[in-house]
Length: 249
Image 1 (cartoon, rainbow, N blue to C red):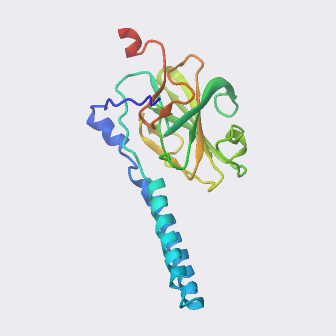
Image 2: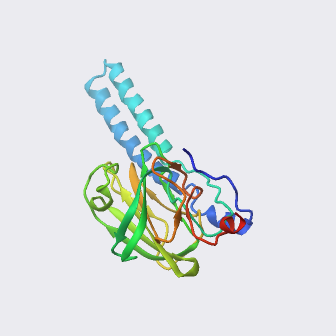
Image 3: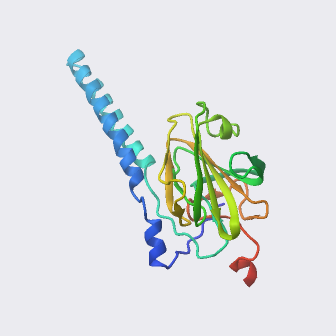
């Protein structure tokens, strides 16, 4: 089930803010493509010198170079979300599938039990991350970790991850845990502590397979379930009582 919404925010100012960092992920991708290009160029040169008559070998190497470069550019692509107009909602920070929902204690920022929505991102998902609410970045803390597959639940604490703590409307707080996968352990934030963000704004990038844990107040009314596909900056994960939709129903 895809729970995406497709209602654009009409304000030009908000749209402009949400377009910040658009295309920045492709710049990261081009850096890797450049490194791959130099590596494969060296391999091609050595292959040509060692096996000048075996043109099929150089053809295979060249083919691998093209496929690798194309995949990297595909991975670092960026989507253009359409955040909903509705107030009092929590948007998905990531593109992926809701893996599980439970109650857990986030010990570094919230320091109390919270509703955790864990989203798994495969290598085929967009890995640009978005602000789930309009608010202020209070905490940005990096934790080193192990190399393990992000599809495992224990990766939430074992793998390298970045904790993002936010405060938003009515003094509420929430947290994101951006978790790297087994392939390349690097999380690239585009935000700083004290910075204000707008819901749907691009806030960072996780490289090559990952997971995002969203910690919400227990008063939040969750709108998704395990197995749902979500879109970063667009899909509503949860609402709070008294929002526009609640008042009109």
